Length: 110
Image (cartoon, rainbow, N blue to C red; front, top):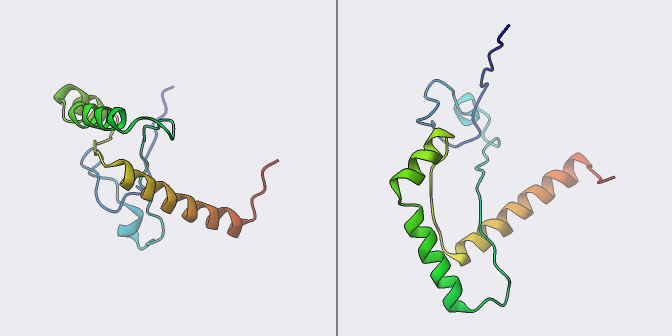
């Protein structure tokens, strides 16, 4: 017997075009339930600037490729590129957010 999965809600701040019938938590009144997952590329701290620039440029080009975009879309994802400085800011912001949540719920790693 095949069982079906049903999405209850999305953690995005708006509708997802790949799941048009699923409402976001924010649409249901849960304003603190927004979370956007992302992937990031990391390099060694002391990597030469020209290599970092070349890698960033290659990633920006790749994230505009129609086949890559189509593959991401099949998984319900979209592409966005940013600068290393903006990525560092986002990581710092997310770390502070999740540290507060972990502390609030009293989670301790075992």
